[in-house]
Amino acid sequence: MSDTFATLSEFRAVLAAQETIDAAAQAAASDHNAQLTKPPGALGRLEDLAIWYRSWRGGENAEITTPQVIVFAGNHGVAARGVSAFPAEVTEQMVLNFQHGGAAINQIARANGATLDVVALDLDQPTADFTTAPAMDEAAFVKALRAGWDQVNPDADVLVVGEMGIANTTSAAALACAILGGDAADWTGRGTGVDDAGLALKTKVVAEGVALHGGQGDGLDTLQRLGGRELAAMAGAIARARQERIPVILDGFICSAAALCLEKAQSGALDHAVAGHLSAEGAHGKVLDALGKEPLLQLGMRLGEASGAATAIAILKVAMACHAGMATFAQAGVSDS
Ligand SMILES: O=C(O)c1ccc[n+]([C@@H]2O[C@H](COP(=O)([O-])O)[C@@H](O)[C@H]2O)c1
Ligand SMILES: Cc1cc2nc[nH]c2cc1C
Image: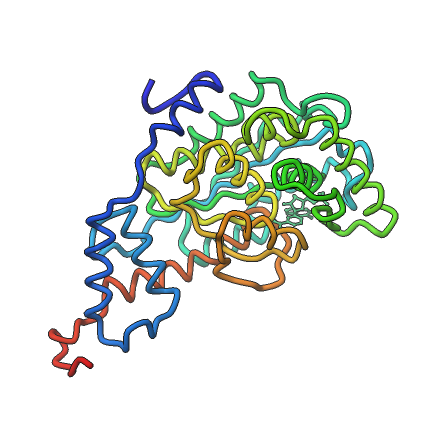
């Protein structure tokens, strides 16, 4: 099976067979960039971004016209432990808000010319409380991975994935702690805004989950045990984008934790992804450091729902507009250095 999967081992095989960058396109982009009418490097990271983008997409005049944003929503059994400042029903209420166009992500996606898909994943069946059992069995995990995989538009020219799930910063903290080590307190933050007592309880819950599930299998096993449906779906969508050679912009702490699981299972699995922003959730920066990804934006955002990454679409659009639209020194008759 080459380009889809029905089991976890088939998904692993798909990841292992994925292609890497187009080195010729990367060299052509680098050469083109060097001829544009600006001092070398004067567009800073915009130049790196354009070269990276073309290393996946090819085509010199590749402007961004068809961005896709997907928000996956899931409910978490661990929410019953009181780890969030908000009640679990907010997940479903926010899905309705997304569907009615009233959330931040609706405005950000529209402002940046992106389509927005909202995918509610079995909200009436929260995952198991990971302090007592694996969050998902293999069937539920594969179903969620596939939900993400199947949602990607093969015609999109950039993909942004994000999530909505009350208590999912507890999952993300447990995943990061299980995979990257250290103490639960290093990875546990306030999420939607728990108070000091809530933070202490949340840290204890993260530690319990890591003690029960840590050190077992690869990043995908960890994602099944400590993650949630929306995290699995983001991982599935990121992998599908790679299959279609669609560059990805990662969102905040939860998205990055899901992506970390993929990278841990298959080294290089995030080469087609950049970090859209640095979330105000304290541990996000450490996850990005572990992934070797420098965020494009740092705006103090900690909303989730793909909002930071969708904001960063504007940066990628600008990078590609310059790369595709600028004159070369020869074309413009400007003297080169
Ligand atoms: O993206 C982030 O970095 C981020 C940081 C803090 C909170 N969130 C959002 O808030 C929710 C999780 O927070 P919590 O406190 O319920 O674990 C979930 O719906 C996320 O989208 C998101
Ligand atoms: C209101 C609200 C909106 C959100 N969007 C993403 N996560 C969220 C969490 C809450 C609580």
